[in-house]
Length: 424
Image (cartoon, rainbow, N blue to C red; front, side, top):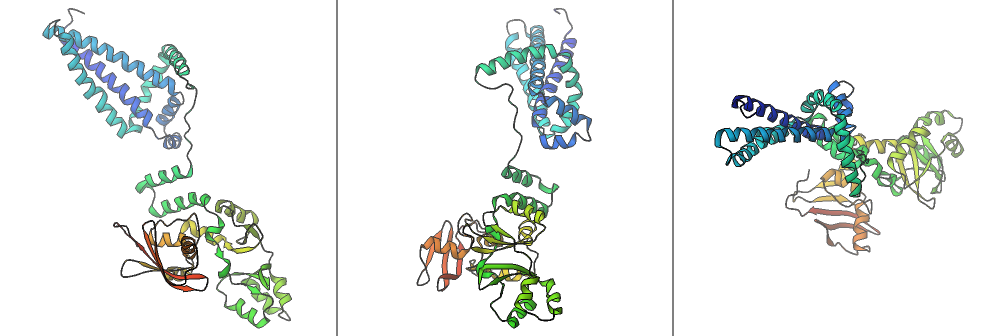
């Protein structure tokens, strides 16, 4: 090609740079495809199906792209050198050709196509698959030989060339994906998805109504007191027990009150007869497991017991659902009263308030892997029941006891000491 016209050489060089840009962009776009979105798009896009098929053999795809990219770049170097000889002579040609081609390749065949491909991976990859698929079939013998050599080298270096990438995600990674969804999923739906993923990290102990707050029917009370409790109770179900909450004999549903009132005589025996069988669960049960158990047992109410069979509290299906969708009960005002914002930026918190509810109400990050209530957290920190009000710090939070009653702390004032404190 010594007598070739420079215009022809320039056309060839331009074509080679375009091919180099194609292979560079194809590599970036194919490797940037979201595997989960691609799996979904295969149902409605032929380009997605072609790309998925190419990615199912990543070693062959990478081999094809690199063979093509290196081949056109080497040919481009030869053409550039021929043009340089034509314009500046043989002595300066290698230097001029190297400098010029490096700039052209970087700008037009590397940075530009890779940037476009990284920003628009699906658009680039789906279009590139039209050409990559027949090229892979055409060059399969060369690709197979190159892959054999590289796989041998990979094995020699101590790696497994046949190892597949694990694209499975754990719950924390799934939560990150939910956060990255942005405006495509509403804030409320994002919150529910994150809450569902959090259920597996929580037990019924975290959300149960504690034993000291349980309202029940003691069969040792006279019948007038029991009927008053049945009629005035704000809950639909109440445990029925004899003398001690640990002696639960059944669960009384408020809808059975009509049957009870129609009975010839209202007696303790009648209340016990109309009570449903109690459903007991261990306090360590995961919320995801308990949600499925409620469905399996066709139940909405369970009594929580510890390893010794002692009753620790109650949990309902509604309690678990509220962890997903937020509070929707008429007791919302009561829960807000447990965490009251003060004018000085601190919060006055009831000792029975759970740490999880406090974190939700204030956007704080108090530790939830220990005591469940603010009273328990204070007593754990002090390692004793204080005789008078005391002040102490936990991480960036300042705690001041406000009211102490016998064996428990009734009121605590908590201040977030962070300078960027933004509570709601």
